[in-house]
Length: 179
Picture 1 (cartoon, rainbow, N blue to C red):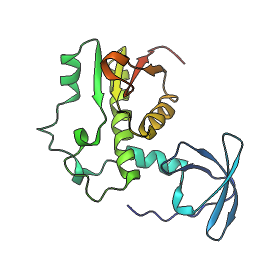
Picture 2: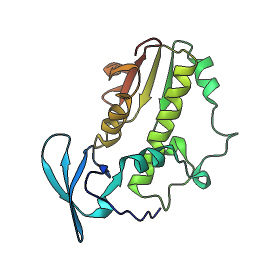
Picture 3: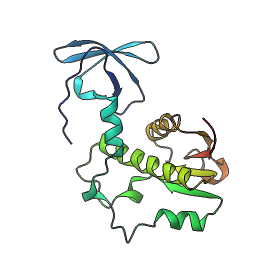
Picture 4: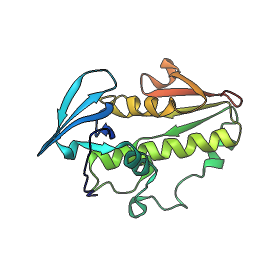
């Protein structure tokens, strides 16, 4: 997936494969300086950045050619029926797509976050109380990005049961009337 980007001073951006976001404060040929939300200034190659609106669009985009056959994939309703008190959503890539060949790390993360967003919004719509996202341990990138995404919803979250999931899952408590 190749996207041509032209950044301008004042643009809100995210750093690909990182949890950093911030505002562009200087644009030079081949480098962009960003004042991140942590208050520090960092310089990046333009290929490492994405406009925040563009990032949200990418998260919602799912490459259809890589999706598993819908008949082979359990429906969201099946998860709810099997686990009436809380749904478990496995975000491991092999659970979401048949073939990951040709996908960059960014594409994989976008696919996982898009699935998480879709399933969370479905759970909110169905007035579910809890949902568990299984993300695995790994380097923690998916967990950090998932938690960053969750801050935009009427939820609280914490590590799920250590005895059941180890450090590889996040439990989300959904509030229906929280503003």
